[in-house]
Image (cartoon, rainbow, N blue to C red; front, side):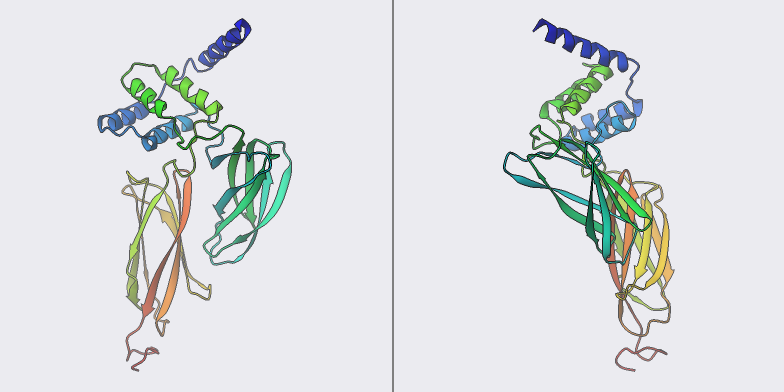
Length: 315
């Protein structure tokens, strides 16, 4: 018991020495204070602060880029849901999936790719599966995306954040504990696999797309994209827009970035070559704050009966 206690003390001393110069940025502390004053120290807000600390390398949460799952019990099989996006639109094909296991061995899979550039599959795991971090590389031609997942033998709590950690954050905000003590508490839980910053919880993009859904040919059509983290607008999020018809012919491509208010506005003149009612598809891909998603916006182009080269009934 004395040896165990001595080892534990040495671990604490090693941590303190390693992080002795650690200081949480003032902006992060101010954000936490504002949330506390609004009575909003919740799992979601704490996760945002954890994300900030991780970005400043004050805590290490190595498998935060995807998700964590418990290895199945003896005799049982489970599945890890994998998904991602490749910057290819309007194509149906198969992508190559390379899964590197914790021991370095590689497993190759083929997964369907849908028109929106998304792919998804279920990866089987059982009681013999290795615990540790798995690296998933999806490739289609020259396009590539990388995600991760983590398997652990430790039961995962329903919440990503233990309830008492919320109280620890309150003590830190009230200056009852130091920056170092907070960092130590977080890192200790992370090492046990009990603190998770999942892809879903880290400033997940909130995207709202608006625009006319019925537009006359030869006129200007505008599509508005607004990107936020659910609370504040996100400036500098990359937006890629591809307009095509159901025949998968690309009509227009454009990309840009959201402004300081989180808006990206795309305006274009509908070509006069459309001679009937026709539905077009706008594939809108957004990436920012370490997250990405693709949405589909549909609209219909029409021409008036009596106009030149218009096949609408009534001519």
